[in-house]
Image 1 (cartoon, rainbow, N blue to C red):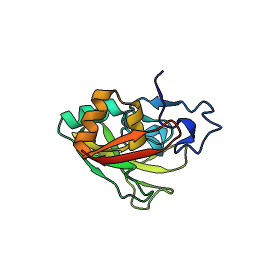
Image 2 (tube, rainbow, N blue to C red; image 1 turned 60 degrees about the vertical axis):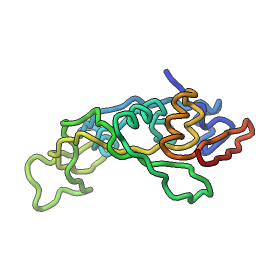
Image 3 (cartoon, one colour; image 1 turned 45 degrees about the horizontal axis):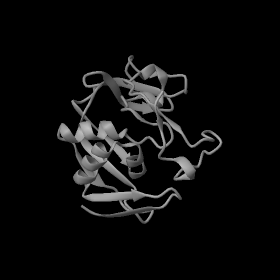
Length: 172
């Protein structure tokens, strides 16, 4: 199993009890599975088990395939997260959820599915060829030097993380 070190020393980690050593596992990519319920409406990419960030090597692969990344707002006072569009979708063509409700709508069709979480889902939309994802800057700590350089160059900022949990950045 592969682990992230990005949340060590409590950096952005609220769930210390869940990961006492600060090592959070990477969740594998999963195709959509309507019967599992809400979390699996759409396929997901490999992601951090705590924050949901894309894995740095997947970000690099997405950039190299033409995905575009942009910074989110700096609501925490620093460029903490970026969003990527145009990521090649490993689940392209698989059925995803079209609509959902916590009750069976009056105008439902027979193909609506009730999942274990008690919600009703209307399947039907095939996943598109591309998807979107988020990347939290702290996961640059998990990147190889080459991956870090590609991501920083694409996003236009370089970062330095200190052992005491501080971060600094400047333009490329």
